[in-house]
Length: 297
Image (cartoon, rainbow, N blue to C red; front, side):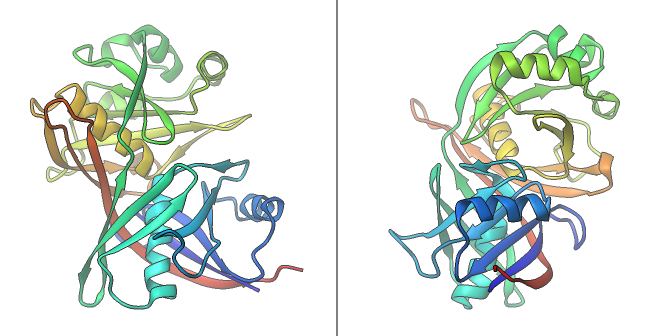
């Protein structure tokens, strides 16, 4: 019998953020069964902790969307580390390492009143890809090219999953974005990208530095994510590479999910020493929502 947990990740409070299902127990299902379970759960990702003890310094974890297994995703990494600390280790620890397809991802913990407070994951160094014309992306998002901040490029960035990072001028432009599916899938066929992550420096709350939205395309549709750790890790690398804030380091707060009534908060840190790769960390809170049993016949 498998035990599963529903958690809110990058949540400002319970029942916000991005929800996730995390499974552990025995017997662990086959890959095909994991995929079917993820499809039935129908969250953006579902994870399976496949080792109850550390292996090579970390816990083996697999991540599935409803359609496929993926090598890395941000909120599943934090949410799964939270469950490992709470349910498997059952004591305060400074760090939990996850063995993912993309490699080992360490997650560090801070605590408040005896429970995990903020969790931080150190992502792989960002890899920067090609750029896009403002007209192409504006048509895809049903906005005007002038809504795009032309001081910075529209560029593909990956820390394990590729995202197209789109700098917009203001919150009004962010709110207007609506995905043109025909254009979206046309570009998808040509570039193999999966998601658009757009942002602006105007925010709903003064304590935050950026507002962001993320659109992810499946084989037949395009949906919006309330909070995306992998995309915001790519964004952190992008901001440092292009000196968006005028410096080679950052420590900022990013709000996401407001347009779909799932207000989320992500903390980003990044730094680039001279001649070195950019280091990226993404942090946030995790809240337990529910627990249940899944019977594998």
